[in-house]
Image (cartoon, rainbow, N blue to C red; front, side, top):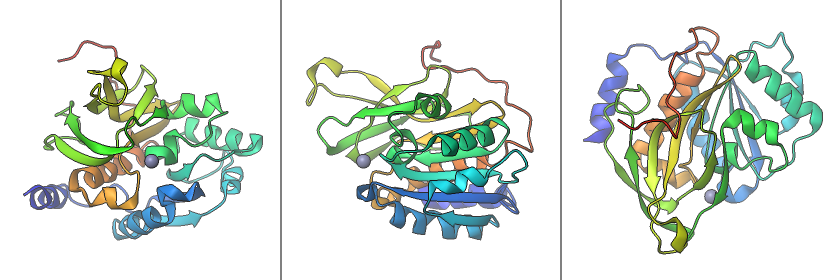
Length: 251
Ligand SMILES: [Zn+2]
């Protein structure tokens, strides 16, 4: 049911925002997160949407992003690496000047543990996944945002990411932790997917995607695709005037 209605929604929306957009897909880091297999899911899809995609397996690609860069969107799948000073500086300048960035799981929010300005940009850092690969539920908390509109709560069998999250993000989905593996966190609600800005650049993150097969869950894949479509539009749409921080009043 979900896949049929999602496909219909995409058809009704007309051509993809990704059509003609220049996308830099950077993959690498810890291979346990299968960045290569994830690349092979998302790059063909990006091209099917009409994006002009450059695939790179080096962070040196960021150094080429100077202020004249025309890259609309960076997608990064790079867990537990080290980014050099010039690379980080170039990446952050690109995003702050309007290049969007999107990613999932450890590939965006457990990438460069020493780099706090990078984490200031992404809006979160993974710190634990109690119990390892477990069954858990994802709750859609924003039913109006285009990224999660029309989606119902769903189940995952994967790592449940416990994250330190920037309060200044727009949370779209959350998950609630049990006390089974870490007694003191029972009942804790942690964001799963969010939007934010870093300067003019749109940042989209979903914690779903420990391994490539996680994207066989239709909602996990759809959230990522929609987030990518949103993030590629930084240069073409005004800054969205929302404020829905983690600690804000819940509806
Ligand atoms: Zn993982």
